[in-house]
Image 1 (cartoon, rainbow, N blue to C red):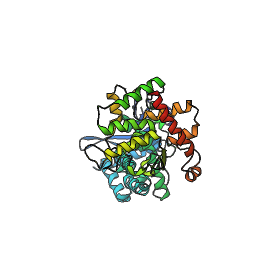
Image 2: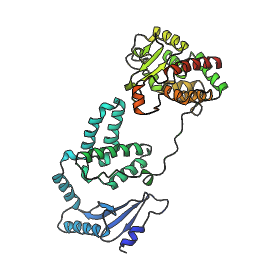
Image 3: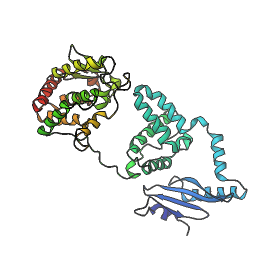
Image 4: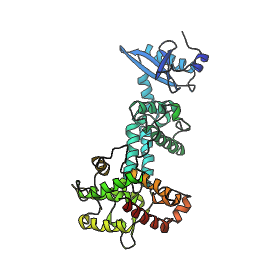
Length: 396
């Protein structure tokens, strides 16, 4: 039975299914997604092969319009013309091959990459050219909300739903760039609600951390007495509980960042997650440890060089892997979890929230205040870092 406008308006996908089809006539049907999207499709046969052509998204394309488009396609078929071939020819004729989504996306990426680290820039390029490949070769002005919705659903179906929010955000920025340069008249990604497209994402699991004093004391003893691994792994794992740095920042730590005379580490903006210079006051015990390490690894620019290549930092995950070897499972502690340990216990000991947050390299205050005071709470932080080192020694 042919569809009616009223029926289409109220139709929905049956519970438990990802999609369903509602047929009209002459091969025209409506593909109803569990997300709520309603997409017009035309199924036809050409050269003894069944093919399917997208006709747009409801309500942008009404029932009357969809039937008109289907009728036009059938007229072409009657003349021995494949309507999909005609569509491709028209797109090639009326849109420059350079104005595809991928071309515009890479133009935007080139303008932004200077503000990013190399790793972050490569990650975004990979999202645009690989994860968003379903829309890459479409003309930028042809991409609509339905295409983006289908892209998000395909990312979810691939088993990587956590990528969807970040990729949607990046796609939105690409279209904002295209809109600003008058390549399109509207941004199809603006206002698109991911929660209405894919299933809710699982709650974020925080890094496992030890906050019990007796357990922390045992952990520090195990770490400091361990001699069953490589030198850099042992020393890096000893250092990370006393500096609050992220594992990557520890691995990429360079001797040029360490000011032994003033007992401080200055990590440049490009090596920090937030893209801002970070100052780390050093307790006396930490200074002595670093001086001892320098006698062994001073040949490299890195404090903890790779065993295979002294011009590169130590490998990723070595500290967390060492914790596993010491008997500490993933649900107990991770290398990143030492930051949570420090935050929890320092707050319990009465240190001011902003002092702790600044030492963790979290952004506080306004952008202006951060720009004019990179040494925020430095005097208090020096005192806190020494007290923390003494506290760990007392627990051990």
